[in-house]
Length: 405
Image (cartoon, rainbow, N blue to C red; front, side, top):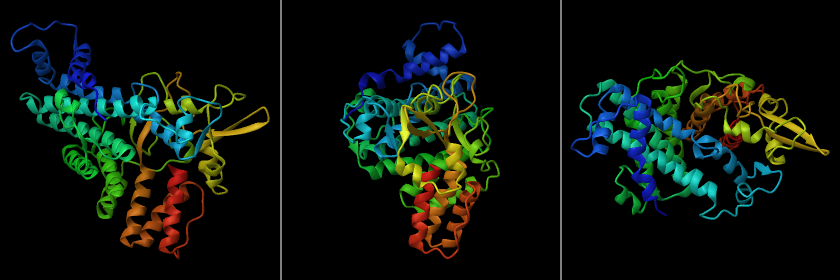
């Protein structure tokens, strides 16, 4: 596999165009060096314009429907895992549900592969501009670099967990990127850890935006906790998750409010101007009598225990022609205005589950059970007994991850 040279070549120019449109319509004077390089230099000459270029990354995350960062991961992977099923034949959904995907299956190519690398090269271009600039305020430069490092790690996490060995792109040279070979997965994981550790040191706990729309230190820590968990670095996973949990910034919300616009549980979410989430638009039927596009399988529906508040708050149903279809209802608004919800990327519940698993592997059985019980109490379920064996605890963690995430 390779990355489209055309897409990579135009990323820096795309940043310039988007940023300049945000700044003003004033023409630049044409002079040596070449105009595109002069404009690129000017973009990263002021804090405001550099911030605008970096913030374009977040707009790209929400740019198209059902891409890997816009709800596609939940939908396509849910189909592949037999937790969702299409209620009518669908060219995009059926290959995932039947596990008959091909390399050119469009959601794989466009919404996942191309989108992830578009975000990666955008982050690379911003970081190159930041490193070349001599005029930015140091604190602004550090903040923006930390955001881009975290964003790049997020994209590589999706790529390596879905495809295994993939090209490791850390620059914007389209000739090199076009012919980049697959890298060993260990190198990609090392790059993610390196990026995120640096980001945690560069970022501040405070959000640089009015809402949780831009990455702060806790969002980078949450991502690093996830990476450490997948790499079986139990010490690192516990430490990063604990940092987020003990920050005092977030708290578990009642299930019905966990995905609301201003949920105290959200660590980082994606903003879309005047639109709600693509997940809500995809899952929620057009009316109470309409069949949903996707429904929850019986296996997932029955995985919820009796009395679990998540089952009543996060699953809805429509009965059409005598058939009852249960569908995901975490997000409760379709895409049309008014704006009521944001797509949550990281939330506090996952950090408890990460720490529970890490503690179990470290032999801290009681600490692990305590974290699981925190999640279960929020869900209205009885606490797990302190007498669980390690095998029983592993099954309980798997169960809670399934119904919570």
